Amino acid sequence: MANFSSGERVIERSKRLKVGLIIIYVGLGINLFGFASLGSYFEGVGLLVMALGVGIVTADYIFPNTSEELTNAVEEYEKE
Image (tube, rainbow, N blue to C red):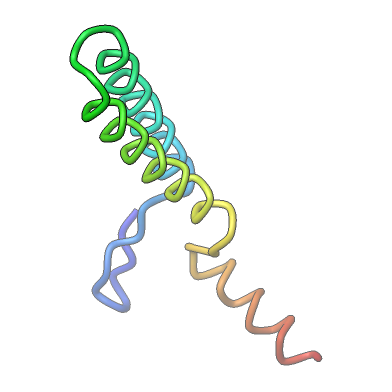
């Protein structure tokens, strides 16, 4: 979904969640591949990639990304 009014691209929430989960499982695969044959270096790289995926999924739940969600958050803040 593109936000043409501000000129920036906004990724839909479900797409970010999907990307985060894919990155988590790619990291898990690298980790298991390193555990099985390549050694501790690839285990660490796999854990790093998994942590990036967890960060993306967490950010997806914490930060509002659509203009409607941002407007609602600002209105709630202004009421207080």
